[in-house]
Image (tube, rainbow, N blue to C red; front, side):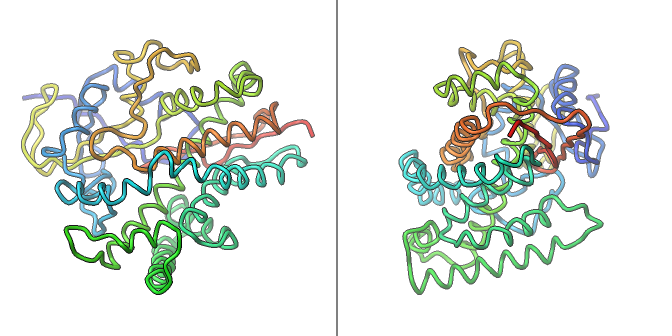
Length: 388
């Protein structure tokens, strides 16, 4: 049976912001599913209904591999790379640490960190939003969440850059991962000796399937929180402020109507969805006429689902008054993002506090913002200027 084959590889050199979303939009309208000839080859589902169904079907779609750029991983981040019933056990244990109430209890600390960063920038009249705010802010929140001193912020920023953003030629990724692992191993040992009121201490008390949690399991959990929590919030902020700097009416409305911010967060999550997750098939299936086989990787781009005109009228337009916004920016099904409540809080607070202090800003005419793509889309740089 013939099926569409396309040389689709979003993981290339930096490009102008919005390029990848436009490419995904074009491919979705060409075909509902296709085979990419890039790398080792992988399938791509392009439309909301099929992508949602795949996330909900954990029997045929294994999370043992979650990225087409690494189809045979040696690591096992907990809980996102577990399948049921093991995944079910871990979600049950972790859920109390990620409730709306738990996120709400952090709002004071989150707002304080956010305000401190913006106040330090405001008098300067400009910044690289990505380096000076979007990366620093969620990293500071992460340190608070993990019970680590904020004095380690610069250290964590260096590690995050080396692991997630440094060009391969620069090297340092393996060394940085080793240092992160060593720090978390030290933290786990400290919390076993002296528990505190933080997420690591709570996780040490877990008993998956009635047995004590192991240090390796705790390390895989901490690693996931580090990689997922920092990069996704920073990337979402970068696209949100790129949009607002280019759309005066939306920016002015957020500044004038703080009550619209929660709806603005949801619409920006939909319009600029970031993650390019994948699953490994456990059985042969046929989707949209494409014969897929057990062991094949299937990419399920959230941006393709959330900008599908079959689900969202005029999907490329950012509309803070959108009547129905059933986006899946945080995924769907059993693996839906545990940290969504905290992420929403961080995004809401950032929009509120920034526009309270700096309501008018723009991208300089000679600036060249750039986006990257790995497992997560994001901006490398976003120069902004404003009147002091």
